Each structure stands twice: as C-alpha cells, then as structure tokens.
Amino acid sequence: MEYAIVILLGISVILLVLSFFGKDRIKKVEEQVEQLSLSVIQETYLLKKKLKVLEEELLTNDLDFNMGTPVSSTSSIPANNRSVLTLFEEGLSYEQIAKKANLPIEEVRLILEHARKMGL
Image (tube, one colour):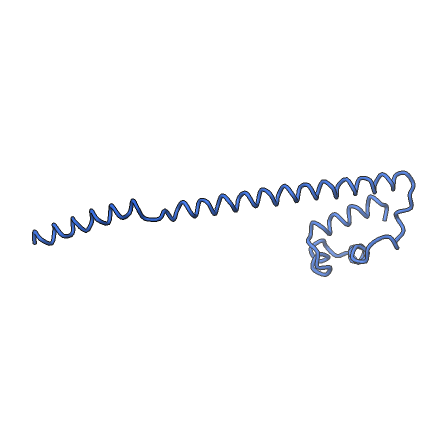
C-alpha cells in the first residue's frame, strides 16, 4: 500500500513538471483570436472607406439632380430598381419585395427612399 502511494506521488510530480514544459495551447488560441480580430478590424475599415466613397458619389448625383440634370427618366433606373418600384406600386411590403427581388430588406428600403427623393 505504501509503495502504491509513493509511486502515485512520483507520477504526479513527473506530470506536474511535464506540464510546465508542455505546449501552451491557450496561447495559440489567443494568437488566432488576435489575428482574427485584426483582420475583422481591417475589413471593417475598408468597408467604411468604400461606403464613404459611395456616399460621396450619391451626394454628387443628388447635387446633379438638384441642379436640373435630367436623372429622373425611367430609362436611367436600373432594371432591379424598376422591378422594386413596380412591386411597391402593387402594394407589396418591404419583406415581400425583398424576397421577390432577391435583395436585402435594407436595400429595398434605400431604393424606395431614393425613388421618393427623385419624385417617382
């Protein structure tokens, strides 16, 4: 019985020493999470930058419209925007239009708001 206790105690000491020299898996996971968060931050920055450029383009288009440039003709409206307008005129909700046009609801809302601004 005493031998068993001494052997188990020796094994536990050896395992304790080995645990200090073993690979730290948590550190690898932390590094991976850090890399992932950095890549997400970079992608977010790029998306914000692209969104800013698009907003500036939309603002210049609105300025052109306000100055009297003929932008409101139906031939200048893209086909999917015309289909969204047609579906809205039929009385469908934003969700129904989004499903039929295969567009996100937010994009449908933006298209309809833009059409209202243009007077369509």
